[in-house]
Length: 165
Image 1 (tube, rainbow, N blue to C red):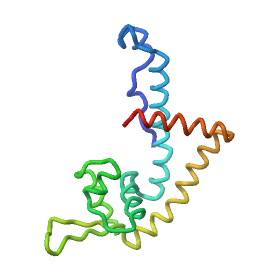
Image 2: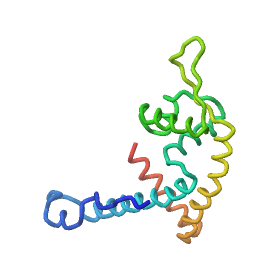
Image 3: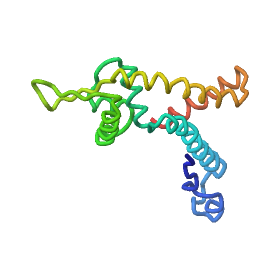
Image 4: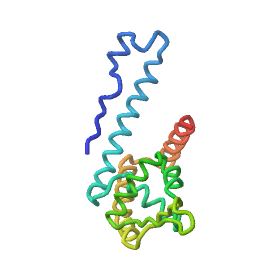
């Protein structure tokens, strides 16, 4: 899947002065490049999910349940994967229809809902992960970074992530 990357402003808009007088053009261009790469990166991994017939959101729910190795409340899943409760409800509905998770309600308090990975769901994730990890490793190995280069990449990504908190 190709994710559109033309939703970031072009250099010509900056050159026309639309960014203000004090804009750091080099920083803006670097950020726009990073946005384009991140969109292509998502598209790259989307192909793996698509080949397994699942969306990235559903994959996140399945991995959260696999990692927890326990039942989780939908609100906990939503918080842990960074989506809103209505979004996770839709993902869970789809996963239930596919037989990959089950939903149970509390006996005493029917408002309490627990989501659990089914054996079919666990098998599904365990078959998907090698393909995904292979794609991830292939991508980073293609950069041909030595140990120092890999450390620099990690440091830059860590610093960038820290600014997004």
